[in-house]
Image (cartoon, one colour):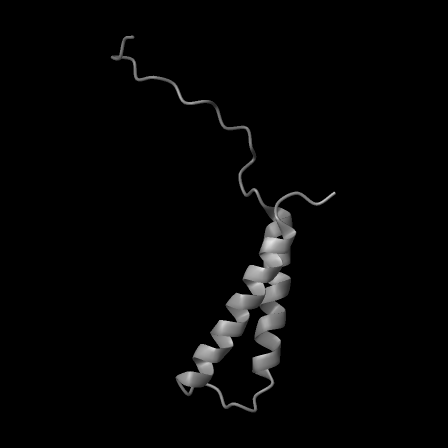
Length: 73
């Protein structure tokens, strides 16, 4: 069973790769006919899925917050 939010990770990773590729084209870093424009969204999709499967990043065993010692009710 996968924990986290895999759909959100996939969508977010794909959009990150898509807009990252568009930015590289607009700034002239890569040509418009480059294969990197197909690879970046797919890598973003895969990375988003991996990060979503790994989330939540903490161990989940955090102690509850306590009041400072000088405070009284």
